[in-house]
Image (cartoon, rainbow, N blue to C red; front, side, top):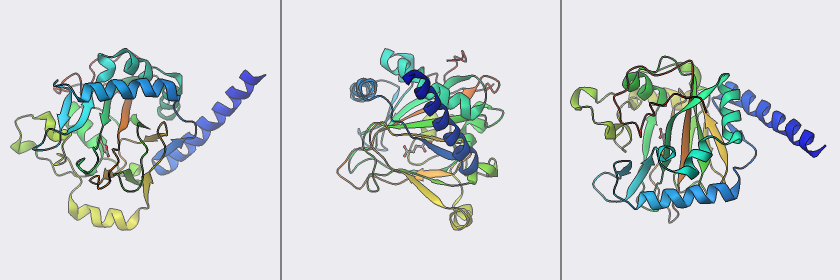
Length: 266
Ligand SMILES: O=C(O)CCC(=O)C(=O)O
């Protein structure tokens, strides 16, 4: 009986998430990620962020870790997380097909030193850099730390997922294919400032604050950003991007830890 009740309540949570996702371009999943499993992943990511390896990216001009990439490819706890039913069911429901892991990253945003992410759309990168055909993907964010108003929460402009790929400031001409420009605070493919005024005036801004374990999903075309971390609290968030198995990217030259070439469904 209690299994049946759980299934019904899970279906209701997924239906609610799907409604919000399609309507506003993002949704909360109102059930936190299991704390014991998340604690293990958090510990592994902290360990990786202290090691010198190509998957770790630093804030510009410093040795403060900004992000760790692709951990599901080399760590069992992270691999188990991307295969967990709670995330896969959410991704499959919102995308409407089987999915594979496209990207896995933890953005750390260290206390006082973690830097901003300018306004951008993720699909601009996947389309221009990797040849992803359509935005039939999504990113699930899982808070590793408490995220509050002052430690640089993700903020999104509701409804902008309907705009398709906007013109972006591409630093492509100047770059010798440096993938680090796609993950630094001087982001390639940012939305140009002259478009941002209108977007900010026309669309409600929502912030993703919440406790460790809180789960949010957002659309590849939603315009989003986050500010520098001005607080004494680290703001670490895990981002897992799932792509539809019917939407495989054709031409990514970026490292496998950034864009996973393994398109086997999870
Ligand atoms: O970590 C953040 O605050 C933003 C991350 C983001 O926008 C991205 O990785 O595309």
